[in-house]
Amino acid sequence: MKKNENQKALIINIFTFVILMITIYLAYQFYQSNNFNGFIRSETNLNVSEFKRDKKVKYSDINSYKITSNDFNDAMFSKEVQVKKNTPYKVTCMIKTKGVQADRNTSSIGAQIAISNTVERSVAISGDNDWQKVEFIFNSKNRETVDIVFRLGGTEGNAKGEAWFSDFKIEEGQSEDDSNWKFACFIFKNTNVTIDNKDINIQVTDTDITDISNTIERFEESCNTLSEGKMTADCDIYEIQEPITSLSYDDEFGYYVAPEDVEKQIRDVINQHNYDHIFVVVRLGNEEYENDIEIKDWIGLGSMDYYGIGFSNIRLPNSSKSYIYKYDVRVNQFPEEVFLHEFLHSLERTAKEYGYTIPALHDYKDYGYENEYLVGQREWYKDYMNQEIYTSNGYVGLPNEIYTLKPAKKSNFEYANELEIYTEPQNIFEEIRGIFENLFTNIGLIIGKT
Image 1 (cartoon, helix red, strand yellow):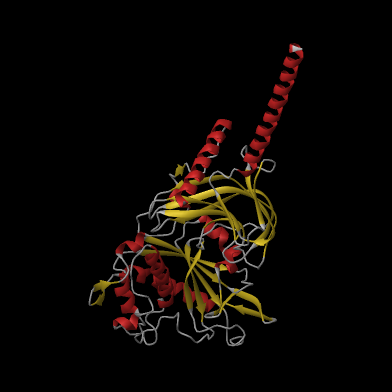
Image 2 (image 1 turned 30 degrees about the vertical axis):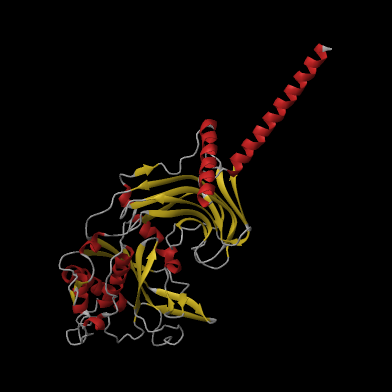
């Protein structure tokens, strides 16, 4: 009788042990699929996207982070990162996509790395793509924390499909302290677009190119002289034969060239160099087509950026008789004004992002300046660039250090320092420790809210 009881107890113990092992295994499998290592999951349209750790489709030994959106949505994994002010950072990860589509025709929507609640982002991947490395470079500016997101979607629209993210890394680079700015000036020789079902083909002439080249030389000189040596400018000119085939539209400005409209034409050049600012020179009308493309009173547009690099439009006049980019002692002694004005818009935006209070670039009349014959707003720019605009509270303008606060770029990471922010558990013991750390963190959050 006692022997039977012992056998029965043994069977029960074995059965209990097996059930326990199965439960632990299933719990561990659930943990591996749902442990997001401190990432927060969010989506614009709730309950549309699914977030998983994928142990089947992965780039390396660790499970990938997967977002599935069966309908259009903006979904992301995010983690807040502490950063040093005015410091360049580079975030990299491997991304794989399947059937990723955007809800609008723009290159800014897809699988990407970004900073939450800003337009700062990496390239966006769409369609079907095997694993590829994606880099996102940014400057912390005046921030001490940034919310880094790995996203399927975008600030300008939503996406659907499947995206996998893996092998995250963040590096801290070295800030530059020089004030020599490198400019890329792209002259697009052809604009071939369809507006209101009309095919419009506009060309830039050899005379236009000569005028712009001469004006760029004057722009380089003026950056040095008007800033009183606080900055220098070095500009490379590229003549682009491949036409512009799309334009962006804004109710305030009408049609213009956004970075997305010319990304494929300028991408390789920008990737091969360390430019601090980009000019895109384009003709959007001439005597024959002057009423076919809606332009609302602008000759230059600034305050845009191409992956963190300042980006400005310079529009050639419709009339070949215009002297706007031609030096003439009797007509125009400051043809580089449009280039300088749009560049200063980028410095104006940078100053505000760093927390400086400065006059608005367009408010020259409020400070007693005039748009003078022959030289335009030259005196205003000079005082603006040297913090010599007089007010009752002292002198104001761009701070001197603005000329060294240049965009972050690849050259800042020659001697990079990798931060231990995206470290994954390396074994089961670290994973178990992570479980308890997350448990205690969540308990602390619950207690803190009560």
